[in-house]
Image: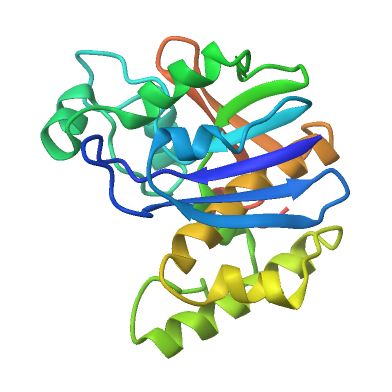
Length: 229
């Protein structure tokens, strides 16, 4: 089994150049790939045959006529902020719902939405993984480049302590923490980690919010209401 995390850039056309981060975790916990990509086809080319779960950090179901989905409302009630994902919001700011379009393509490739089988895809929220780590929250998206890299490296150290079965080479650590697009690649790692732990612990350390109409959201347990479990 492989676990592919996607930190999807939301703009539909044209998509932001190398604005989407992807990361792959192998079944033994090795982080084997991290890239910055542009188009949906670039992303889909990473999904080959065999067993794979895909986690996307973007709304995959965007029902019409709603400013906020049920899963987002539940998340906000627990104290975790998230952008609303109404169809008008996506059309106005991003030219459409890229996540929904990607979900349709994943379905066409034989992956099942929130499926229990060997080829499935899920909506995830990497920030919840960060909230599960010991404080203070890593701030690898703000400040001078040197500070961002230092914070990204700290996030990786905390992550390896939180889930000790994860491992990566020093070279991969640099890909995830340094250079243009590193924050996107690191968020993609967190997306993949959500799936990896969901599988590793048979769902016992995961939380699923939402419903079939508005869509579901998969998160790790441990951050709810500021508590750690």
